[in-house]
Image (cartoon, rainbow, N blue to C red; front, side, top):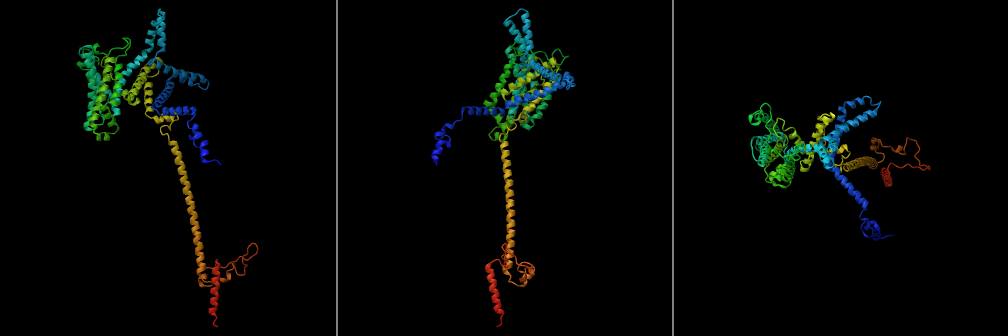
Length: 550
């Protein structure tokens, strides 16, 4: 027999004595555990949701492309006769459409090859071939960056209000007034090159801050809902632009068309790649806006006030932060950034004011801010992505005949899927990631419920058996008390229907007494206790003695 010390030394307790070698798992298990933890973190992250949201959106877009293709519909008419024709047509329709989108948004391989071949035919070699070819191939990327520049700046302004708990819908109006102010300074005055540009940008910032501050003042002073007030301010700014383009101050000599004069060269943002490209220095302003958003919301005191009010207004008020004052500042700062986006757009890209100068930038900025989780990195990536969809969609429409509305459908689907992470995880079979212990808790609850049901059934059965035993005990007690308490031959016995002395042997008169299996007589007197039999005998004897008169 081994002692407890021997068993512990033999490895019964890991990590003690001889079993200490088993305390650390093998390297393979450690690697597998680390990989499993990494995969679990990735499954819970927002990155997986974003990636799968785009996958599902493009899959649905592929279905729409196939449905809209006349050639595919024709091959589907004889699918069962020659299915390969339909499958080939479907594959070519989807791949050509998305290939054209990539060519129009990121890199044009066909344009690169064509430009290189043209230069070679002219006798060029080396860098004389490479640079023109790269310029042709990367032109779509420069267009994407140009479109993304005002979108990122405006989305940064939207993110400020979203993180402060205010839903700012006034991006279009703030962008329009910012563009109007910057454009007016740009084409009206003649100033030195740097000063003119800075004043134009500053005018756009102030105009946007003023327009956003109106909604902030209404919110702080009168408690007006910022959603309604900013939407109404959008329409006011839109019709104000329409009116301004019909006045001499904004149309100049050309009053027949609703456009303003071109911004003077001193007020224009400089082009980064020359006259052949539209990419301008506003790209650096967009990067600066993302950095400003990070510093404002993460490192500044006023940003802390914004986030505190957005998280819990009552707690912020108790801490000495005024929610009303903060709401005004939030919408003013958000409007300033969106106004800056309008100034950059008109000074760098449009170069003049038109009725459609704002386009969809104001509303797309809301989507980009939500898609980027109101963070600087997310906003930059989402802005680039939406710009790529826009520029690529236009090229896809001209090159493949796919309607541009398909891009809008894909954008909406992306936002829809990203807004519902549990839906995305359910579609990919990871629905328990959002609630890791749900399955175990459900199983435990079912076990507890089953145990409770079994316990209740056992208690009911036990209670039933106890009731039956009690009833039997009462019946036996009643029978015993009736037999013991009533003298033999009394009138009570006949009244209750008890057997008479003549019938005591257990049957009708003249019947034989019951016997056991070996023939012995098993009949007993009505009293089951021998002491009762002796008492009866004594009573009978005493009675006989009393009845004898002699």
